[in-house]
Length: 246
Image (cartoon, rainbow, N blue to C red):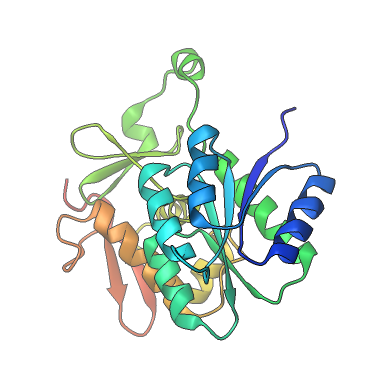
């Protein structure tokens, strides 16, 4: 089995060397980059499955690199490293598409667990191959859920817009859509979302959920400022209204 691939980007030379060696010992295929320019070159040659990126780097910072990855290589999982006190960096990182965060200083075992969890979610979200799709025809109406202007194929775990084009999702966004699909018409609190969306590595602060919902609304709602599919329930959390916008 081909080992999972990982890119680590950090300007701290000793930490970069330590992480590269540690992940290699854990059986991962690892590339290391001391800055964003080197990371872009590595990704251009062979895109990794997950990128671990330090937020605060000289020159182009980690947030800019993460934003570029999410646009140009949406299939790459993104885990950001940030000082524990830099809450604003964590919020902005979620806005640009990061899947997870780890605060510095961190335990190597925790970071490894977060990377493995992200890899598992990405494998679960991977689309079926063309051969699998042909071999397993299904009732589209029974296996699709409408989210605003989009349709989520539950078998393929893929989101499509009204014209049939695939809408790129991060692993955490897919987790949220699947959770809402399983709970139509039922208000879910932020704690319930944190617990049930198969992503226990999310930071335990409300804004992490709110920002992910905001990103989802931009993708599925006809008017994200007046959501019809993923509604806010004041004092509770969020409510999925199936069929909205269809």
